[in-house]
Length: 480
Image: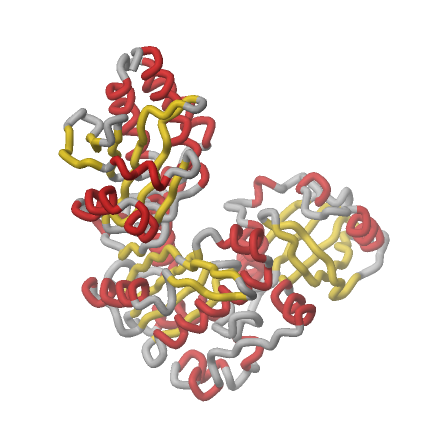
């Protein structure tokens, strides 16, 4: 077979190792797809022409600079242990580099690395590896039955979670398409995983990831396989549930059975509440090509995140096919606040200002319902309609300016009148923000989510808090 440029590019882009090449000034010239995925880049444009120092990947870049200078002087390095920063998290890597020659002269270098963070953490903490699939179990699936004649089980499994590693779960999905075997491809993204790592430590994060991976593998035993996409994202290949009703049932049990998601895990004295956002699409009903199929599960995942996380989305062509993931990415905090200010400026009284803000709350934050509680303790809609609900016991909840509840447990115990009013409307999650300036409270703004145990994010809280300040100023101006 002739090694043409196209074939070479395909080989590089399908390699599981992160591969990069640089010029003689240590500036990036190109990288493969695994490299882009590792850092979360959509394309190589962001780094072409830059060096490691400009990208800010190392807390101390000098050792890595000297290492590359030695390679550009003619040395080669092999499996050198190092560290790099990815999304504000330090990762352990093992890298190899060698010079690139042209006409006998060194013109650059090529390197590759793999992420060994999970292995290093396990060794440092003395924890044992979790293994979810045995050779016997995997041989039930034709792709793995053939693969295991050539590859050891340890290479197939993710070192931390014990489920299928990234490259092999992708290859398995592609093999099912090649053999025209129907299946549903699911993605599960653990919610607020960085918060867990930052507040409880990486060991707790690892335990959470291992727990969810284990329960997913047990849940799908006999009809599916679980793989680790990377970080806090897992992939599920479901060979059983391919029609809409079956997929709905699969997810409903996954979320409401309280063994996989929406549960507390006790770790080192901490009660960690674990949820996830999921999406799925089916071959061949939704897509006949792998790239399209993966694009669709990506869209369903982002749709779920826009709905407040802690939920699942089953792909439906008329609803999701034309969604643009980029357009679904929310505006930055400052941009939203600016739009909010402009919308409210045109209104005169407080309720008019609240009505002017509703489109932003609905479109940018996907907040389904908004209620306003005035000084008299009565709950109203933004239109001013009195809902005949006395919710004056909302005061008992407000130890701070913002109160969040994703399951209404605290609301039920502390403010039964408010709970009954919300429960009658099918509300499952609330964000309540005090409308106040200084020590004077004018009322409360209630953002409510029906049929979804939403997890409220910091940017959402910030925007709604900013709105309450606009309303408070308006109330003072109106002399209320």
